[in-house]
Image (tube, rainbow, N blue to C red; front, side, top):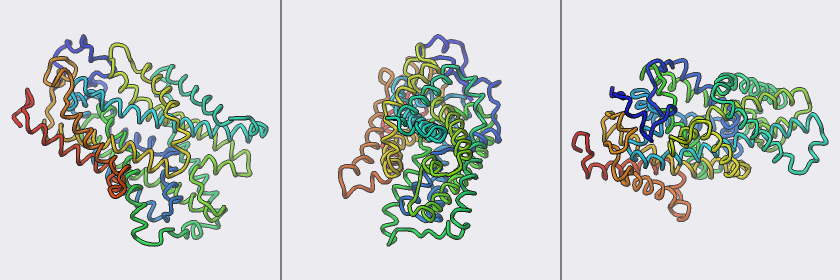
Length: 472
């Protein structure tokens, strides 16, 4: 294992303590820690909405459960591959990206990942604002008549998120660990209500698939599966931010393999069952749990559930959607942008990306948002995995990841071959948006982008000699 050999990297403009390799004393995460991480991140409102959106799109409950399970099993593969260098060398995602994109070119990958996280931050904040709006309307019905009440609540909840970030990482750690049990309780409450209101599991599970033929089903399944993979395509890149604290490779692999597919599938099942029940109860599928809770007749149940959603959403938002982009923005200017400043940038970008439009309907969320950014993150994953496992054979010179003029300098800090491979992969996937006969390229945007960029990067890098590595 090649760890930093001197203190020279600490004076480098590419170094700060947030991006530094994890010391031995920080390697405290075991199997349980990683399993618990995925439980806390998977049990969230958007997991529910992803699964519920599949029902609203026309799937029956078996088809929806299978789609979620298969998608999360697939994304587990690049997740574990990108986890390896984090656990081995103790480096976060933006620093790992320097090996393939160059010490400055890594900002292409880091900013792409950060912008997606900003969008997720905005989406979670919008959901929290909706919950706050329904809560206030339940407690004071006159609030429902206030103009732009949802927007006001969105900004109020956004401000709460900002204040937590300003308080620092200690408050974030204080919030960790409480979201999963809270949201699990809300999910079980909704499931109990659905069971009673729909007349048992029989009617809930009887809603048929609305696809009249197998070809019609495939037209929905392909982009739905792509969106399910895209749901965690973000974390499959920045997972080194977490695995850098692992005690061992074996423990992080087992913990993630146990935690991700199982938790996502089980919590999705709650969303699938409840949404199937709304078809029986209301005659239409309601995919947003906040909107569903607004129809409840018990003010006490509504208030308790919405308060739980607010608290848990705050926790998930800070933990899953601030830590990574804060590090990514820090990578842009390590000497001037620390974790807190990066978090503030994330907050403002979350508004700029207009989350209310991304959540306007299930199609925009699954096919537009998830499928759209997957076209960019798939190529980044393909390049990084190819570089680490195939080109470099898992050997990194950690000091040089923090220094100008080292083996990752390439052309003035940029590996333009990686940038070209990224553009080629993303461009190939996005062709399907404008050329109707090639729509399948966009429907499989993550897979297409990954494969094209992986192959392009391999061929381009094999055509040159990488200084400091064995000939390729």
